Length: 290
Image (tube, rainbow, N blue to C red; front, side, top):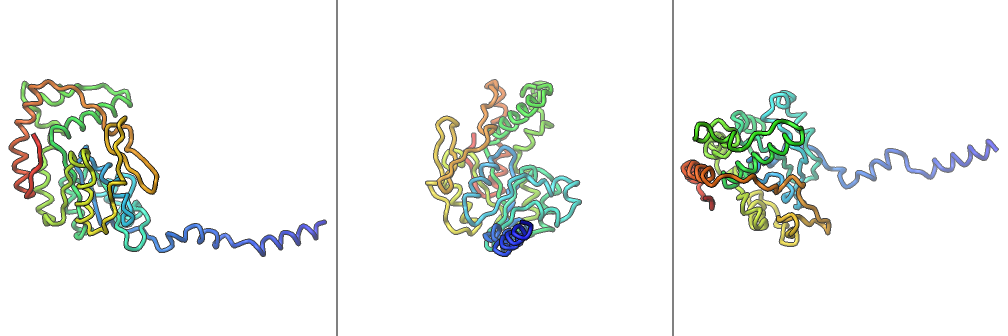
């Protein structure tokens, strides 16, 4: 009986592929794939639509996208780990694919532009912006819900935004919407031709025209088309369709903003008017903002 068992085992192993053969076969489509520094970095802006942008860009077969925000250039604890660690956070990309990562906090961090230039001066930068007051309200709404989930004490928008009847210029959400202040640092380091601006408000209303412009900027073969998008009536925004698979952004996207007193909204619109004009002149284009 023992002899028969041994014979059967020998027969089985003789006909079975080795472990290395199985692993090689399973990974054959990515056998030439590798991790590398990103060719494209979505630098911001926070609550501008960066998640929607990277998800839509991922529809293109020529793009490999990092799924998490890496915070390499703005967090010293990550930056000190060096380029090898940064590359290890990137997705596997096949030959000819472009790698993209997004960390919205990069846009407003003073040290980031020069750090990126030193590591990859040829990086192509995507900046998605929204009407500044709407972006501020989205910023507040996200923080509000984050604190709610952690059962932390809440502060009303008016408490954070107003001080002695005037706008509180130290409020971070307000500062993040002063695009010209932050853009100046980027243009001191990178030529304007390396930065493509995406209209976040237009991307919400009708994503295809904005994504065609992104494809052109990145010199990608035109692939993204109208069949990749469908409007979800329940959520109230566009969702994505890829190879017959449909997906929408996380439920935290598209939350309702808090009600704001009309006089405070008017203060915000008036306040942002001049900074917006400076931003338009700086980047050489205008946006349909209030």
